[in-house]
Length: 413
Ligand code: GDP
Image (cartoon, rainbow, N blue to C red; front, top):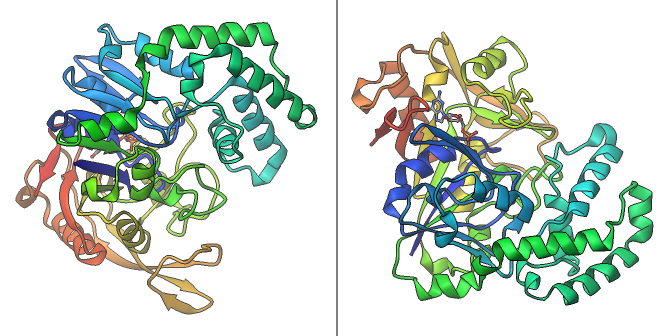
């Protein structure tokens, strides 16, 4: 049976901290979608690790880590991440033979297309994720298992480049030198082949073990249910985690949704509760809301109950973690969006298009001193009221409240 951790907003909710908190309870940790655009920084024995492709179970020497079929793997990045560990984490790493591979041309296409979009840019991380998924759906992608037969793979890729010659020219993307490409693929094979296997079968064979599906990105970035086209190119929600691992819906035991006590968004796209004034700036500053790799300021705003309820329903959440409550310390008033107004009409559901949506807010009294609190009853009264109000409105138990980046700064209710 598997539990799932999933982001309920537009990402960067602090999933890493909750995964870190609970990962020790699991024998197998699985990544099921996304690529090296995802991930988080974790600190272990004083050393910082940036995990983009590796599941967080690598921090637990006993856990098996699975990169599932739904992930798109950039082998160069994976090899780099593995090499950053002092111990041999490959002994406990399995990579799906069905996972699609990102090659350098996917990255070049990603960047070229984003540039051509101009002011309509999606704000992708330019890591080739979208083009690799596009090839997967167009049935012209290459899978990790194909590294087993480099000659056959080279023939396939030569055909692929031939078919796409004009498109590559239009984008200004170079077709790789075939000798160079062969060397690259041989290198990937030498480094990774012994870890590539049928992970779906492996999970079925170990179905009695405790498994954790570690979501990447977040619900509102889901390709189907997110704010299209400003979304990622995979299904980030619970059902995507099942497709991306091969586990059946019946194997999903508990779904933990992660949300911040406010909302942030990176890149373009609708964001009803964005605060472009001083409050938004204050959240950004207090929450250090700047991209980890790019340093770009994140857009900041208030908690959105409508979006959270939508995300909780899509994922079938059993419990919720509210992160970064301490960031709201020191506000006189805090706002919560409890409905949307669209064409002068109030709605309480998340529409398919958010363009003309205006948030309906209620205002609550702020608080000071939630930072580092570890017991719910010791929170400032207004902070308690805030959490209780959110819990009532979202209709799901708030099991964790995080009051600081430290593992210990967590309230478990
Ligand atoms: P993820 O991708 O969802 O794991 O999110 P990030 O890795 O971007 O994590 C968010 C950041 O917030 C990290 O730097 C965490 O250390 C930090 N963080 C997590 N929880 C809290 C919290 O409760 N309070 C504060 N102030 N920071 C937190």
